[in-house]
Length: 463
Image 1 (tube, helix red, strand yellow):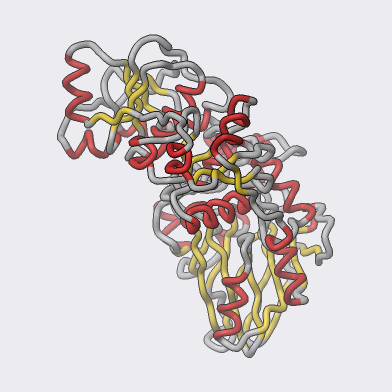
Image 2 (cartoon, one colour; image 1 turned 45 degrees about the vertical axis):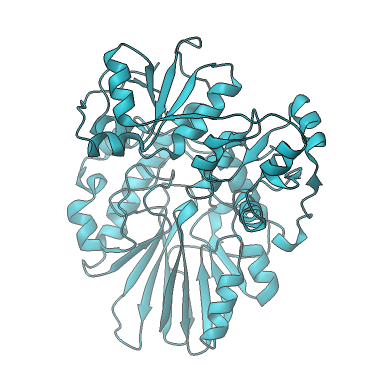
């Protein structure tokens, strides 16, 4: 058997290629599918099967393009209502090729159509070897139950409890667990960073599996859910129909500095994808920095939305190409173009640049002792609860799209996250909303702890 996990860090997404005797299957493919074709070719495999564990909400799948390029069949749970050519699968359905056997386990809960794939390598053993759990079971967590238009979170959480205990927890302890997402994904709340586990390990260590009462499980799974990005339901609908091939997307248009200035005056959004330090030093006024170094696509989808038509500002042609691909992975396809020549061309045209003040944690500590500035923590709730700066206000970045924090616009505000990535995004959004004196805390809470500065733990109070 050939088995490979493909992990896409910017989306915390895992997909899989399984092969036996010249035939292969891809599970939960990302949108850009060339990597599966290359891997299959290198190992003498023909992709004949594509399996989706569910309709993904956090990224656009490449199943339709991959099927068109290989002739493979697509398999998905019968409750998905998929409109592309596919095979509906039910509990107990088996797919066999070579020495591999893949059995479908219906596991509704994250979504109504969610399935898990039980894999047996019959060349080695008649016992199951691994289970690909999609977004039903993660490492240290389970899928969030609020991504359906047809079921309430309480209904889905109840189904999830049943799926976990009636399906997955009945598997042997040594069965390997390979989920569709890892740490950082918004499809769960507190996933571990490892890429695989076992049923036995999850049985003993996964907090959700320790909740033995169904009603209590429902209560806990539906309480304090992280904000759901608006684009999640849109991506699920795109995946229900199947996305067009990446090659069909139009080319980006080069936009001169003078034209960009006119477009910005008319309300256009400029998305600067350079590193945060480069952006802080000089940038087009009013632009939003979401650096390629982090979870760029997820934050672009969350902050900008799929209907946005940003003008991209990059430091190189390579950055521009990467940004376009990553945006397409979440369904942002209608970028207006890019600033030709980048920030240097903007300056050469005689237009002013803006800076973002960066302060160290030591400087922040000194300023706080003088009772200034306001401190805004934009991390997620579990991060805040684990430890935060005393006196800080809390408003997670993923809630900025709904409302901005209720802090004084006219007073200085120092923004921090874990390391400085999200806080730069937050600073951009605050300045676009009229906050005049905004600064970013370099290194974030990680640097605060490393400097052994004091922090506290308590329940968050939103501002």
